[in-house]
Length: 484
Image (cartoon, rainbow, N blue to C red; front, side, top):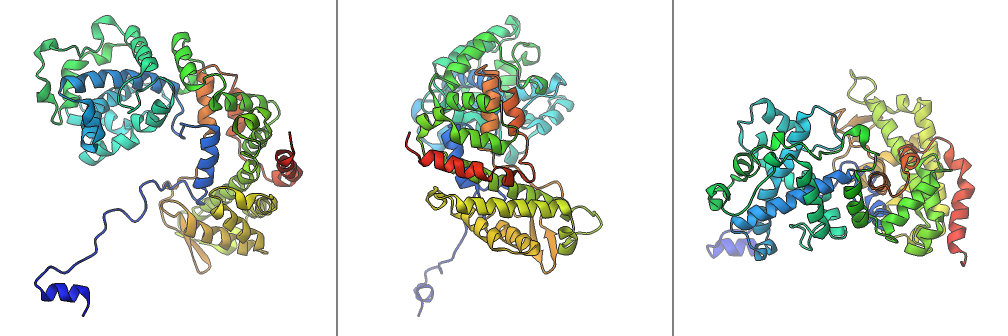
């Protein structure tokens, strides 16, 4: 008799299985089409520690420092204690005071009617503004509001806030010395009559009254009631994304993000120097791998595999995007015949580029020793072994289905490639090692002239480049292996 049957015989409830998590891990990204994220993150952590693909506007570090300081004061007045931050429930209660300030900055930016660089939650906030600000929680439903801790602006910048020198305290919920200085800059830039005020006893506020889901209403009615008239610093507009920030703010952020000799500063200067002779993302990676300054800072072998990996990742992602475009070329057909896809010269070239880049990865002497590179080698081996274009197509799609992160884009069914998500639902981000966000922050902090570097990082790896730079890949590996 099985254990379950014996339990039932004794009058106990039968054991059963239940799932406490979704099928896909919450960290899986739809944009990780090839499963290369582990190795890409390895290089990103080396070159741009503390950054993510979302940390593109240094101004948000200033505004979030102000928001952290203000919300920490209100939370403490409402009975919050440092010991509470050791629990998940305590952190949620603390964040409930911060989230409304994030969304009020989004609302302020939307009211200017200028295209800003980064406004998360803008759809809900726009509806809230159009509805006369009558809805609670900025028009967000309960699920959207709960997710904003991860999807919002603090979620995008919290790792960098904690990693940067002096922006936030160790636990990340209060402003550090540099963060307090930035908060004072924000206060000083606003009109005196419209500044936020959370001093104890102001307006005879009953703090506990606002602690039960009414934090947003507190800020709007009492803490910052004239937020629309405050003026002063605002999120960066898109046209000014590469312009240095004002002097005092720039100096504080530069010391926090790009301290002399730090990895981020060395990488930024290496990108600026490489941009004089590099025109594409792949060429920039080649120059970084050869950089003596980065070699001294990270170790001679640390970036040896970066050129070969970026070459393969760029080529394979171009092929994936070409496949996606082919699947949706005819809106009347829900799937694409392989024969039609393979008849496209541009797609055949993308497959050929991927096969060539695969060969170069396998020829890199240390490819098996690269950390977290097993999935990369699997694709390279499959593409290198495929002799015909149709075999390469099948190998690429099979690899995507078996190793891609998040939801799959399409699936092979016989002689057809069938989409699994809508035409606008695919995330086709390249594996960029967070170099573009780092360059954007460096430009705003005036670390170096990053204009040409940003242009190169945004330029895809051109067809045929693998052949032209094959010797360069081998030379890079040899340079790293030579004594210095």
